[in-house]
Image (cartoon, rainbow, N blue to C red; front, side, top):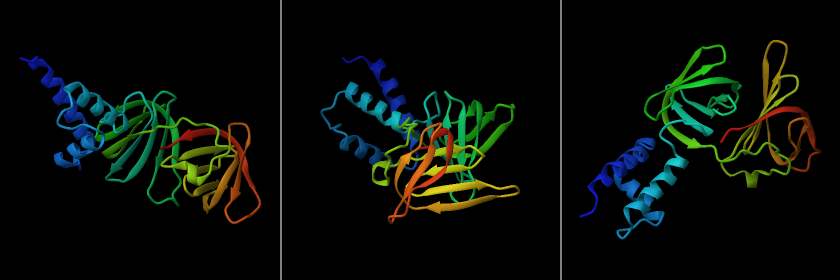
Length: 224
């Protein structure tokens, strides 16, 4: 007889994977496992290892690793870097300036529950209900040589000297700080020629325009 005590840990692992992606039907989850090579002849150890891989990509809670959290009520995209104590909160409306602030603690951050983060001043920020979490796979901090076709699902934020903020995705959003307001502009780009802390953020626009230096970078944060 096989050891029956192996069953509960495996079922708990399956529950975590399913709870991390609650919109999936169980049949869809089995389909994902099959697409990853888990068939009828797979051992329990093989199933468990594949479930762990899925959890690393789509965790059920925010742990020590950087994560992108999707919330609803209200809708936000929240990039959390627990190790370095950084958070960026983005709104689906790209014209609204993201908020980039210092993190002291992750208070609550499990799929299906509220996202509660504490800042350095001890204030708890309730940022909505968590509908999903993705691992932030890249830790790139020098954006030189980056092109849209190489970006994949990644995105980055750059804080510039003077207070301007730039978000680099398949488009580039620039939030320029004025005396009384913030001005948003969007750029189509072909390549980033320079983009590390201490250098200018130099963008080569699409369409053959001349390179633009948006300002000196003082911080870079991977967002997705």
